[in-house]
Length: 210
Image 1: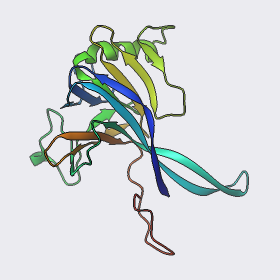
Image 2: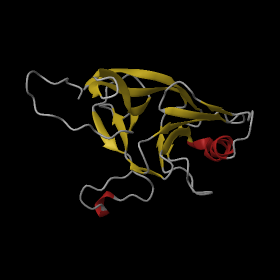
Image 3: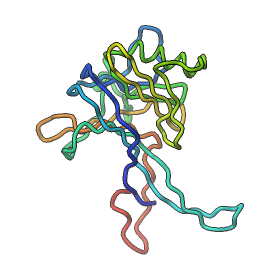
Image 4: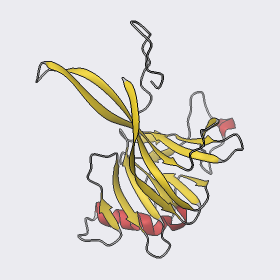
């Protein structure tokens, strides 16, 4: 398994300067699970990818494929000096049990990056487009390009956007925040595939990114 270049998936408008990272299946009036202040603007969305080979039984041959493992909102190009797990308003690390993590919960195998300032209208559009299946809905679109990002909604009044992405299942997904030496947010990452298990070195050095 080797790490390949991140795939550019699009951009996200955050005019409010408050990023929401959450499952879109929150209760009415509950708001997003996690919010983070960032400068207002438009930010790049990336997908991390790995390439690996396996033996395909149906073709009786080695097959090489590329698979996404994580999504990122890139705030700026400064390398992260440290990473921290984002906390929700009810999270208190002092009360965590061993190996407990914070994050957003989903029972629909879906997470999203969104403008928290327009959360309610963006989620309403998401539900109307995906769950109710309203045809030709203005402010909603499906993303069909073999991407982890699946749906996009936008609010015309505030200009905020939402981009949903697939996870590997239901549960709680930690949100990792990269910070510069000065403490500024450089990027926000969600591991949608979990961390691959590292194998012991055998014939040669493993890829540094694995």
